[in-house]
Image (cartoon, rainbow, N blue to C red; front, side, top):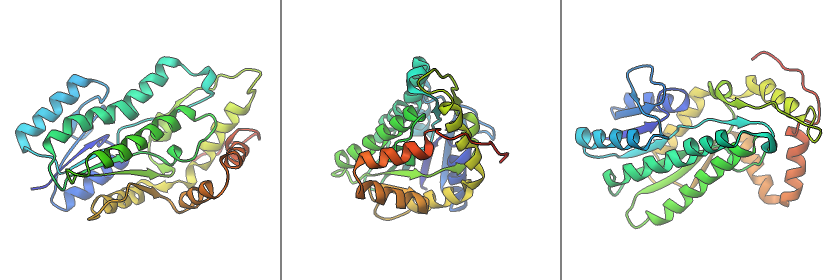
Length: 265
């Protein structure tokens, strides 16, 4: 019996990956804030709920072979005008929620177990008006790299997976702040419109889930994976050119300097 625990496993990529594990005969224990199909209801920002959930996993299964941290959401808008408490909540979910799950899962993990953190290409490529989301996912990546070193002697593998844009409900659940001032004018609105316009070009949730499933089942994990061919190219370019050059290009493309006509996805 192999056991995989998935935060954010009630929808999107987390749910998709869980279904693939079920087909392979694994025991899948998904949880999330909004369960729909009998999953466990757990808010990763609620420490007591997280601890109680993992205690139940211990009593029922006695171990965890794979932990996948997929819970997360996004915020867009100008950093200067963002709600400070909402930004703190973003980090509570995207970073501290994952950390709490890891702390509770590790006592149930032995040699050969794996921790998979679902980050984002936004952790690698800084984007204007999505700063807080980029920063929260970058923090999750650093946590992953550190854990990979700390757990190496215990033979517990750790990897961070950075998907590009995926067609899930994520874009609809993102907190969108359109507040602006004379510094930004229409750039905030235009930047968000560009994201909406490109929604139809995103990779499918099924494709991303299959890629994640394939990565998790690798015998030996690399520290970091990118899902999406063009994002692998971007990763190559950001290493090739000075950061100032990349920031100028990113700001020109994603900085809302041009008015974008929104399209229905």
